[in-house]
Length: 255
Image (cartoon, rainbow, N blue to C red; front, side, top):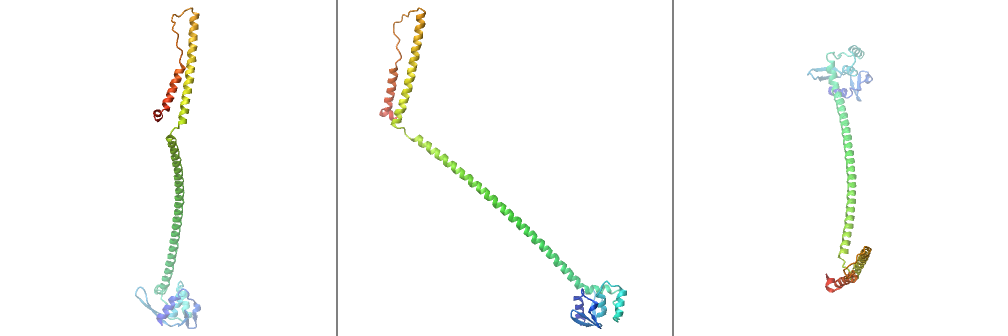
């Protein structure tokens, strides 16, 4: 009975009230005990104490009660073994130890919950930061890929244009000249040479007239009876014709 009463006192230490007293009994957690139920326990200092249940109850229901008020309550309930002033600290420590342990446990649990919440928040922030970094990296990679693709496309287009131009140029260079083109080119050469020879001849005749006039005006008679040969345009045409014939010959065309 003593151990049961001790357990009930410890379990209800924070809710003890004078209203639990009825006649000469005390109700602790739905269980009733007599006033004079003996409670024996050992303190942390190794001292063994024994008090009646009512004596301990009146002390524990208000741990801060002063000795005068406590003694008055003990007189009202006819308590013969009041808790000594020297034992009060040991009594409170023994019966409140479990409650203190429970409070410490609750505090530790609360601290663990707070720590867990803080860790969860930190993990969430880290995950959000990693997701942001990953999205940013993916976006940058896509942009770089697009720029590289555009650059490669431009390079391919430029290479195709250059290759097309080179092929066209080589094709033009490799195309052999036709017989008609050769005749046309030679005709152009002959016409230019003929025009140049005509201009040269006219210039030379003009110079001869000028010299003859100056000589006549000076009264000087030339003793040279050999007539001066006029420039021969026919000779130049013959040369051009000969050049054309040589080009049109089999050996000349092959050359």
